[in-house]
Image (cartoon, rainbow, N blue to C red; front, top):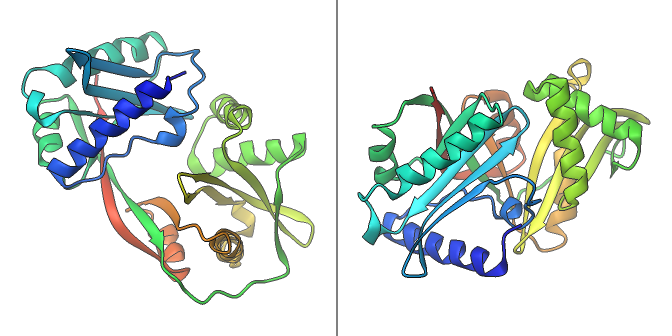
Amino acid sequence: MLTNEELKAIKALQEICESIDTCQLKLNFDMLENRSGNTKEDYFHYEKDKLVGFLGSYGFGNKVEICGMVHPSYRRKGIFSRLLTECMKDLKRRNVHTILLNAPSESQSAKDFLRNQSCSFFMSEYQMMWQNTELSLDAGVVLRPSDSPADLEAEVQLDILAFGLEEKEAREYNNHLKESNTEQHYIIEVNGTTAGKMRVAESNGEAWIYGLAIFPELQGKGIGRKALSRIIKMESQKGLPIFLEVEAKNAHALKLYQSCGFRSYHSQDYYKYQN
């Protein structure tokens, strides 16, 4: 578990780096604020009690994403390379096989660093923000809290079918999400039948939508759009800006989100580590 002082230091360093590099780092503060403390996931480098380097690793089922930063005045001194080497040793001991290095698409310093790493471009991801758009609700599509073993089983199966997680990893991932209790988990129902699921995290005055998935046999019926419209209505009525993320290559999801009023404002590139 990270201390308040560590979180404040990370945020302060992030603001400096983003200001100088004119980019946005994906440091997943909702996850940083809820570390279990059971596994080392965060790496720090201090100079005279000042945080100048940070690397965070984030587990998502069968893969780990890595994002970090170094103070502009302390770059080209091998700081991030040392943090990455330490993290990789720990991931190897944990038998993690898929490792993605994350960098803002517009960050030249990140690209310069990655050029010397054993990695290859994997994908781009858009961050999208909802723009006020007229939406209609369908009473036949209902969102309700996930609160039973049957609901958890449905969420596990949807992560296997929609996101390619292995069963063991899907169960561990969903159990961890429920234990951390930092997100609202919803089951999507159509005429009383479980059709899909999604999660919403409210943090720092923002709402983020994650994990929207519909069972394959029910796709193509507009259920995802109707469920998304309903959650947008719920969150917008609270006065919260609404965000989500989508892979650039996922044309179907991108079209769905755009049709509901989401517009891309930033992108991240992911590189698959080869070693």
